[in-house]
Image (cartoon, rainbow, N blue to C red; front, side, top):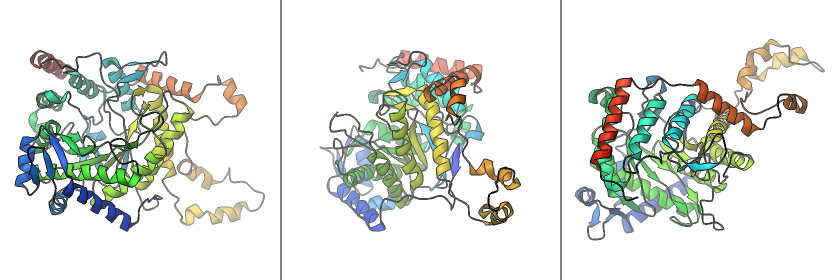
Length: 491
């Protein structure tokens, strides 16, 4: 579920203290001189003005004085908890653990039988959630894809209900389209209350949380900020996300991209804390760069560097931080996906991220893959083993054993080997380490084939404890009512 950091963990650092100070001051300068545009946010603008910000209501632009930002940052709790239906899957963001989670809301799924891309369905949401629930590397169940076979105006309700019913791990919700955000949040709260058992139980253990993603460069969708503030007042933890694309919605230089991302995150956190002080708030720096040849998300090696840098910036403020990893431009599982994902995941883990996000998807989150979900689980385990460090004590130095075995001996029969080999070595589940002849005799299966078989095995055998039948019925009735009451979306 998660890896506890300790003093032996090697570290990767991108910045000196002077560089971090420079990024901080540059971010504050952007917020003071250029500010943030908030669309559909009259009440938010008024609240920010009342708290010391300079607001141009005609343009919808707010300037954040540095002292306002810095005072707001002091109000953030240093830990927060994500709750699952089953308390054994709760996890705490406290700066001492690293967790992995999947991507969310990919529009396509790679069919497990044919290997072809197709628009995702509710059945895909349910099955991918079950596979996620079974794989121990993932701390959250989530909804890796989205039910495109359901009406757009209530699709997010189907996604959340399917995730709740198919995992006992924490899982969040989304609300879209934006014109229905507030009404959909009320329905999501009804669903969460039904799953929790009562409003009181939901308040004690919030299933889900609030949050919004900025619209780079330097813009908020006020309707999403409104629902975040509503959930904050109800006691839900909140997240502020920024997802810029260097060269398109952020400067192409990595330092410039970090400045605009950080400015957006700081202003979002400030907005939440001014409206609802001491709300448990985490941040997400989900950064990338435009591929100048294709015009698509680049998914290059600089992403791992950006995310490691973002972890350092977040630590500068004491934030609990989620960054993207598992990045790949590959359209199918294979060599390209594996090397890109390993590179982009290792660096933020070494930097000390709280959460590394994005497992199970391909081509920058455009498609979910059952095989990739299993393969990424193996990458998680290998990365965690790589960063455990090396313990140097008398027992591990093994001088007595070395002297006992002496020249030309071997250590295979030593009790020391039997005692320590399970902790010292990594034992993969998918990676094949047999000889060519043994591999060929066993069927000569590729790693992709082995991953597919593992996913199929999970779907046959793994069934998380579902919601009670009465609760499932209640949630179905909530969604049916929403379909009748909400206007059809134009999207």
